[in-house]
Amino acid sequence: MKAWKISGSIVLILFIVISIFLCVRKIDGAGVVQTPEMRIITLIIWGVFGLIILISYLIWLAILKHSKK
Image 1: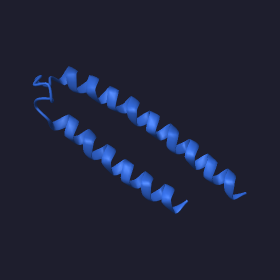
Image 2 (image 1 turned 90 degrees about the horizontal axis):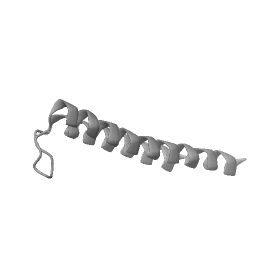
Image 3 (image 1 turned 180 degrees about the vertical axis):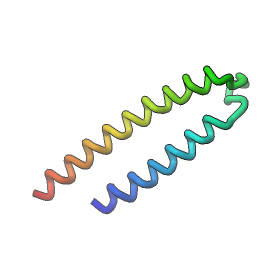
Image 4 (image 1 turned 90 degrees about the vertical axis):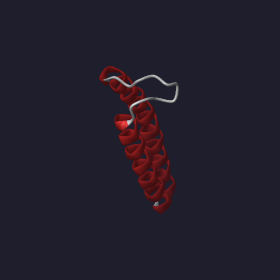
């Protein structure tokens, strides 16, 4: 359970840092200027990825709790 909390905290911090980076950058890796619409699209894609990670962590938590019983 301790490893779950530590890894979850690290992933959460990384997710927040990368989200802030995606919001403040002016030009993306392909050289496209980031308009507000492009930032919203980028954050939606990043949010879907984060949701997938969250679901996998919740499954991991359920497995950990079930194995301790």
